[in-house]
Length: 625
Image (cartoon, rainbow, N blue to C red):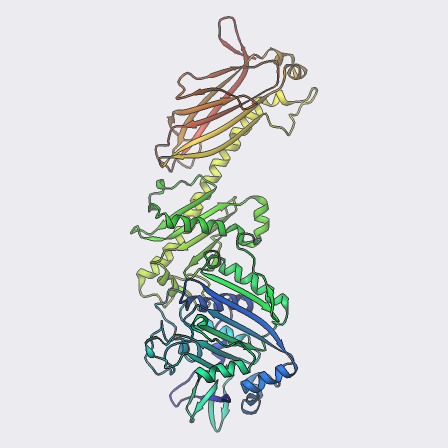
């Protein structure tokens, strides 16, 4: 059956100019490639009918007879005759014609009713949602909405402002009375026709009378897609939709397809990582690889954090109330916490890690951002909370199932942020939920970064104390400056969690030079026979490090020699200071000190350490040198 061109006219009451459909996704800062990666795949994932959605994207150059056949079978030549130059925006068809096909499998397909006037069931009636209606997406959808304004990216990418759709599907509730459909749709600029005004919207299909264009169905649909040079869908295992975009703008090379592969990974790595989505790309039938999220230069920093969230959700973690920050351990350089609203219902889960200097450089502008994710597994945005903290980080937030529909309603046409001012939100309760989610995530990350910064500042102060104390021993003879390395004191801090209680764990290594080296520095150091240590732990009770709370007992101290040999193990040491012998040989000691638990998890344990070199007098008393 030959496709016929049908143009829509403005009614006596009103109408919508077609150019507005294409322009709706402009002004959001995304390139067409990014919009296709986000919106195209979101439409496919949102139409999922199986655990895994497969998407195949191919860019092919049509030349010679293949090009001529495509123009003939689509009846695009009729556009040159029936649509004015100014309205269509082009004078002739390019040669070659670059055709982008976007095919998904394991989806609902373009099922449901055929006519826009029919009462719509959004979860079923996908055909009218994509191929006919404007601004009629499902406000209850938990994915990206069912074909809202975001679908305009298809027409926006075509120099011909035309897109063809082919689909195979299950006829749910017998609303379609067919299982395959094919139709073309164009969005030109409004123009005058037969003393009336045309909207610029047009369709290619089975024109019935003066007022309606029906799609080709079943056998005719399969014949048409085959005659155009594309693969038909011959079984229910191939249910889904093929979208054909002819003459794609500025999209005519393998490099562009590789760019698309990167954008798809950047926005869809959560769904790819969790095996909900598989995407393959090709240029003139030559495969283009999409990297593994765990190895890509950017997503490799976020993917492990998302995996941590998925693992925690499987374990049904204890729900923690952000209002009682004491329930959180904010001292680790990696966190994974539930973020709750005031009613203790979960907004979702936040996971983040502190970045090293080389990681910050590798992430570039995405350093210190949080990937904000909800179903169907797309990164809505990489949100910079602009905390201006000294530490850089990478974060991932995944919304809870209950928040998904609310967040979907809060998003604009291109689904690039959660906006509490969105008119699509039902009431102020939903608006407050969206606003509070962003605020609580921001505050939680700030609290974490401030805690890390305070702890590392204390580490630095302790290291400087020991460095000054032992600096003389590490000078070279005749030198007034201690060497830059190796440091005589090395300290590592961490928090040890047991029975959901946090203890400070400190490993302190002390290196003492041999006697001859000590004498060369100063004769007095040759007399050293003992080293005395005093350790005191206390709780810091506020953000001011100078204020200390009650003392904390030392739960365990392990002392080893330089060869790893355990010398002694102490329990709750009551008889401080600890005095150890110093031989004539070089020696290195390692203390592992673990405190008793903190009284309140939000507090920080501070260690005060004092060390002296000396000897025992004849009365058995320690005398500093």
